[in-house]
Length: 420
Image (cartoon, rainbow, N blue to C red; front, top):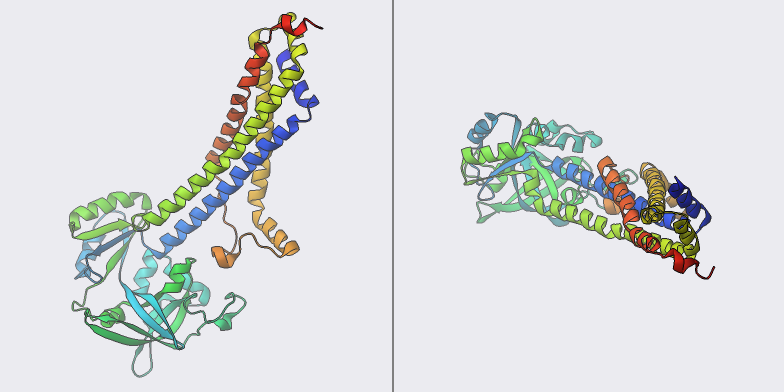
């Protein structure tokens, strides 16, 4: 019992110990806040990438190499857990809109089928559009419709909510120019009938949706049923790898069968590595706090050598003296960790309020939406990560207490008290 009493007394009387507590608290808080924000960014990015793709993508060599896709769709639908399929044609083109020429990608889709395999319908809903609007034709020449990304259709600076006039409006004509049969130029006009916003800047800037049949005419597909690929949706994504492998075996290796994670593997891996490197770098804040604990306890051992000698003379064991300083390190790290977790969770749950408050008083926005393309800072609290961070912080405090504890335990009471 005396060990805990003495440890608490040293902690209370030595005000410098509070700096060690603060160091641990800052390290734990920083780790929790940064990792939660990084996890939130990762979740949002994955959701947005997934929204532009399907669970599984089936394609074949060549830009429009998947012929007789209806037969392939029938084979795919025969598999368990497959609930929807949607063919598409995708390719590069030049676009002319209001005299501006840009390089884009067109994606020819059946809008009703596409809405069943991706988040296409949610992308166009904020602008008052329905999937069927893409199938409307206009004028005597039956000009096809097109949906453009908000960034592609933007004609000036500003946010859509504040400056709707800075966008190309519905009813305006655009022209797509692409290769036809690989040796001819194909030019086709379209009427903008809607916009979409996926939340992925590159997609909203570089893509335009057009009807599937019109896309086949645009590229001059020799086969009426030739498409670039087939998007497949499952009832549960956890079966994706299993279904992917089975589809590959049934369709043959001339087909490419990928999950959406396979299709964006490089980008997702880069994001994951960035998150891990960030956690590794920030962990050194906790290490620095551990060195503070070591330095402070070593100083206490030097100052309290007389008290340690008296305790040993009164019968305190070597293990008992060690326990005093190990308990001191445990208390410092535990209190600091508890404070850090509490402040970290408060910051996470109020981070958007704090950002708005900072923007109001200073005019500076740490996470500008035009840069990060998020309306608010995404966060995701992972209970396992918090427990792991707290455990490592507490363990670090105990580990860094071992040296001063050993030094105190090895003090010779005779030498210590000789001149007293």
